[in-house]
Amino acid sequence: MAKIQAPRGASDLYPPDSEVLAEVEATALRLFDRYGYRAIETPTFEHTEVFLRTYGETSEVVLDKEMYTFEDRRGRSLSLRPEGTAPVARAFVEHNLGSKLGLPVRLFYSGWFFRYERPQKARQRQFHQMGAECVGSAEPLVDAELIVLAHEFFEQLGLTPELQLNSMGCVADRQRYGAVLREALADKVDDMCDDCHLRVEKNPLRVFDCKVPGCKKILRGDIPPITEYLCEECRVHYRAVQDTLEVLGVAWKDEPTLVRGFDYYTRTVYEFQAPEIGARPTVCAGGRYDGLVEQLGGPTTPASGFAIGTTATIEALGTKRPVRGWHPDVYIVWLGDLGGVALAAATDLRRAGLRVTVSDEPKSMKAQLRAADKAGAIRAVIVGPDEVARRAATVRELGTGEQREVLLDRLVTELAP
Ligand SMILES: [Zn+2]
Ligand SMILES: [Zn+2]
Image 1 (cartoon, helix red, strand yellow):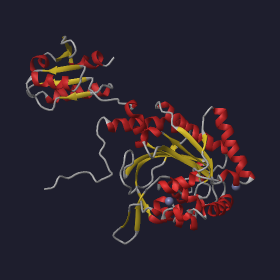
Image 2 (cartoon, rainbow, N blue to C red; image 1 turned 180 degrees about the vertical axis):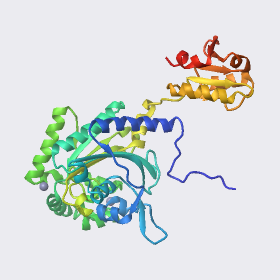
Image 3 (cartoon, rainbow, N blue to C red; image 1 turned 180 degrees about the horizontal axis):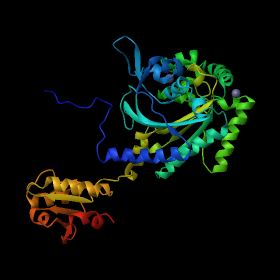
Image 4 (cartoon, helix red, strand yellow; image 1 turned 90 degrees about the vertical axis):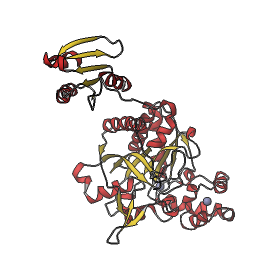
């Protein structure tokens, strides 16, 4: 039989890597809580329409056929979620969360997402993201607060990714700029890839998503930046985001070619980039998406949010990753038929907050003590027939080999100060 392995692009996480993920996640969850973001869980798969309606046909996910789309037994088209914002907006509309929770609604998610891409460093087909979405406010302050939240997250982990900032303006600005861009690219489009031909024709701003080096080079050339084509309101909005970041002491770099891959983004867009992880260094991407809720059949509702790439963040941490590890405080060694007594003692100690491993079988005392050492236990509690006859157990300090006898009903008091 062929060896069974995890599918390409999907990896197993086991200790200590699974614990690193949990630690990084815990850092984000603590911050989400302090900033007033509450948990939302949406399904791992959605009706494909949720994504098609929101991303637009020229977005990278749709163009590159990155979605895992399949039919269920009744022929309905479903897709594994490639990102978290559209599902949150769908849930916001479906459950009328604005009136249930009060606007603006602040929500966070943490979970697994799926895109069919060529697996590479820090880019897997199944990947973990943690995101925050503030639905129901158009204020630049909300954008700045979200950026600060992400900034704090990276700072707490000891990372200093570069914040790149831009404004994509409103729909009218983008249309105006689209025409400018189409004209600016008119004599260059022949040197661009096939996808870019389609983009220039249908939605010129999407050319900034292109990963083809030749296209990227052209776009770095003499192309007017979108920020020169913002209307007065969008200009003021963008200025306010920048001013607030300045007050907060958060550094950023203006990046006029930063255009997020989905059609629903408006005004503020940003990425945090950690170049140490390679060619695709984004560890967090976000922005304002004032049109999304309406696209999903809800009322006109401005919104803003970001997603942190958990795996990319861990990659960026390198040797700074928080490894907590695991070892028992107490390892219980037992002999003969005293497994029940051992487990009862363990339960008491665990209730008192100690990490306890109970030997799974009554091997020789020597073998069990060796196992306790290997597990990294601090102490062993030996439950043997002579001690139990005296309603006691032997406590052995594994570092020094020092031993003492403790009454069973005194164990918690002695070992869990
Ligand atoms: Zn505008
Ligand atoms: Zn291209």
